[in-house]
Image (cartoon, rainbow, N blue to C red; front, side, top):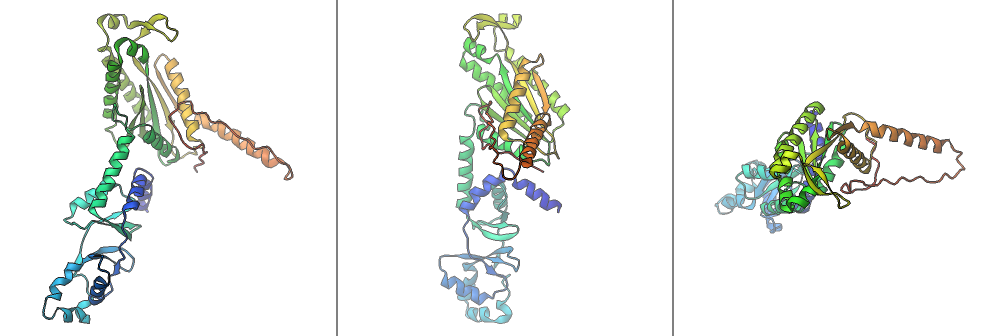
Length: 389
């Protein structure tokens, strides 16, 4: 039961996308039963000349290996080879003809399949199973194509400057975190403060260097297990942490943003560092004192083992509120639990449903709709309410 639970959890993550790529490359070669005799298998090769081997399965449809056509050659050229194959005592046992090759579950990642394939001295490919049962075969060429397609897809979804995952993968991570109630998550949003005046004063090239400097700090933070770092775009970044301790993460994030703030000072001239500000135009085009670049950090906590009755758009709007609070605070930091926001929404919805049910059956209540605006502009998805029990 423990193994089954781990398998189901693993299937919820990146291997789901891999599975779609794998399915398109699976070749179904009709298997033969391990109980068939050698002569009938030899006749099968003669009838179906397009196959040079056949997978062999047991009575539970689990693959045991393959039998190659070449395995019969020594019998065909032997004086009594055919008689041996026709001999019931000899021909019933296919183990002498069997070749072991890699077996992988269809829910495995492509990288795992490649690792399994590399451990075998086999040129044929990999037998694919689903729930331990044979479903098809993948040749080495197809495996390389899957790897290539995945790499191209990853490259398309990367931020070109920092090489961190972009909006598509951030959205997917965010969606998975909302529905995975078996684990707690910390969703961290970073936004530079006073970045535009810095860009206007010191140029976009230095602005890009600041962005790259923070991306390297974020990559260092990602080396820990169960973390995902992404670059939303411009000076906005994202870090997802599964199962992290809220107190320790807050300390770590404050240390990281402080390290960035100190590092950013080196991009300013001596006078700006001494004063702690630069003279630059504000949004109205008027000169004013602008503090040096720093970072506002908003952390949204998703507790485990609770109902998260929340759409991804609503969760994104919550983070937008936290970001605003962080920017307006003296510490540049804001941490809140998602349940503070969605419990009230949940109760309002229940009241609405109760009122509708209380109406006479002959009444025709007006349909209700709610417009979930996307304040962040980067969490794009269907406006669905997720009820997870």
